[in-house]
Image (cartoon, rainbow, N blue to C red; front, side, top):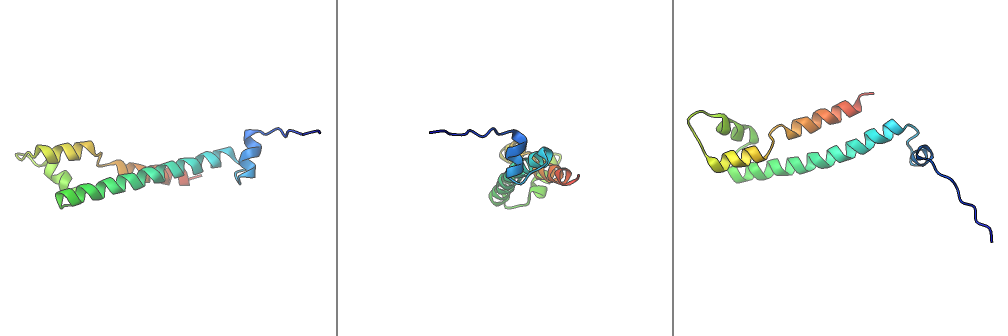
Length: 98
């Protein structure tokens, strides 16, 4: 009984998956990772907005307002990077460029 073992390369595997260009495969993989992050960040924003009954923008205004301190709100705001969604969207846009 003779078995023939086919030799694979990264390029041949990527091509068989529809990615003749390794950079395009990397871009697609990065997009998938970023879309997963974006979904988690958007869920976190919705939870904060529900908890504090305001938008993230309003929570940011509360955090930056002088003379008022709400340690619990401040902690929630600081735990959540307010720019995370914008960052991921900018990264997704950059990946869409050639």
